[in-house]
Length: 447
Image 1 (cartoon, rainbow, N blue to C red):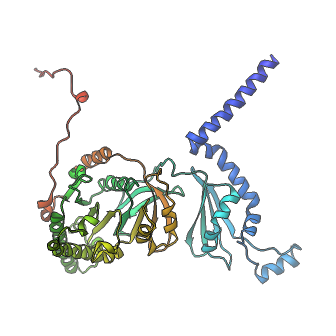
Image 2 (image 1 turned 180 degrees about the vertical axis):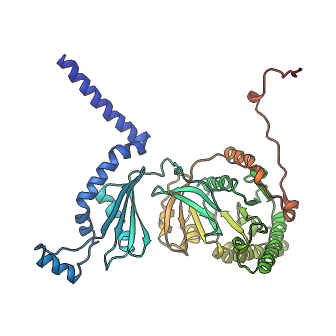
Image 3 (image 1 turned 45 degrees about the horizontal axis):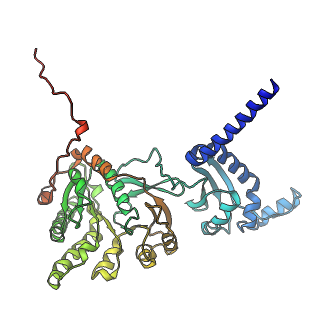
């Protein structure tokens, strides 16, 4: 009986160890919650002061504090680390709120984030400034970008579309009210189309108008036709569509002037025009011309794009520009247009210069991170903003058929605008698969 009990205990221990090993690989959230979080929390609690000291993140105490410590507490005066205000765990990592002492700034913690990551044995440490004097350490216990799972509360709302997951476990959102114009760059098979599909699937659920410009004969955007108010598939049609958008922009400015406001969202709901998002799939096709006689039309089209990028934010027309490369070699107006595109998302690129085109002017430190994206991880990108901050993101996998299905499901939200009527794409009927058709002929029911 004793031998049987011993064998059962050994088998139970082996099964438990095997279960934890399986969870670590196949269910990292479960493993982190059961094992990783308690271990990391304990390690952080016991080694916090010494870790901050060796990483150079301590300062000398004030004269009053040093006096009280030496003469009242009768203890040795030691350097002071940032004060821990709150610690809490998440399903992906550990969060720590810190109060910085005088003499430290968030940049000091950012510079030491790699050392803190190794000291506490976590996958990454991200420093975020909450308000002056307060920062938040966001630790992730495992590689959340290996298998993307968006947070449950990440849903489209009020011109905000969650499109990817950051490396700290939070959702990366496209907020058109804060960042009206954006540029997305990436080489072939880098995940750029996946990013655009997630964006379209999110925008389709919002009461906005979608305008597509896809000069590759519409092979990327034509499946979204049920949800598109306009679609241009050639440079000639794109030029006409941009002219119509500029005319609409001028009429909307007249509407703002009549109501004495300077922003679309300040108008009453009854008279507010529907917001428009212009999705440009490959921007280089709008710049490149084969003959000199086409340069005048190209220059006109680029000028209209620049005008939209400069002024259209106030009247609710937003640009979402995608391309493989976007530099001055495209022609006159390219650099001027790029300067208007505030949001930047750069996927894997073929050369360092392309990464510098996308991020070099707003977040120079992010250029190196772009060049380190592995080819076997499509969808991984670096997102930057004009504040100089940047983060790694990855879009969840979505197939073209899934994105097209979302557009069909929300086709009723498509606004019918008269000035876009000539460009409205034809909606093709979706064939029913053979296995979905009834095998028995229906018979009428008679009373």
